Length: 131
Image (tube, rainbow, N blue to C red):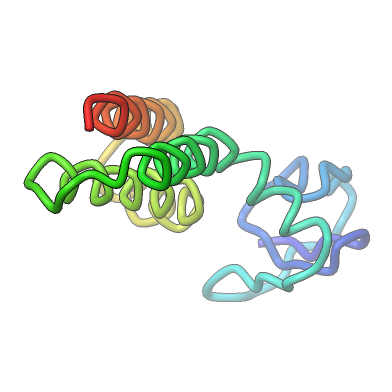
């Protein structure tokens, strides 16, 4: 773990801060058990950068629901569920990746989580369009 001088977060990275992209190479190692996230502009920019697709799927779904006012059905509930799963996977991507390090290869995890959040969001978008 290293403490970032720019965004003041403690991150589990060696070379570059994932939130503000500052160089961590020459920063001293900190003995912490888990990452310490500070809710600042760097964190919100990171969250928006990772969840823009999920947010746009939810926005398109909301517009479609407002315009058509579909009846409550299984397809409607599944579309909402998939949109929320996609959003939560994109918001908690780093936490999921840290939990999955014990099971999967480190190079495979970001690809898998990124792929899943885009596929689930696209499925939710298609379901919203068929309402």
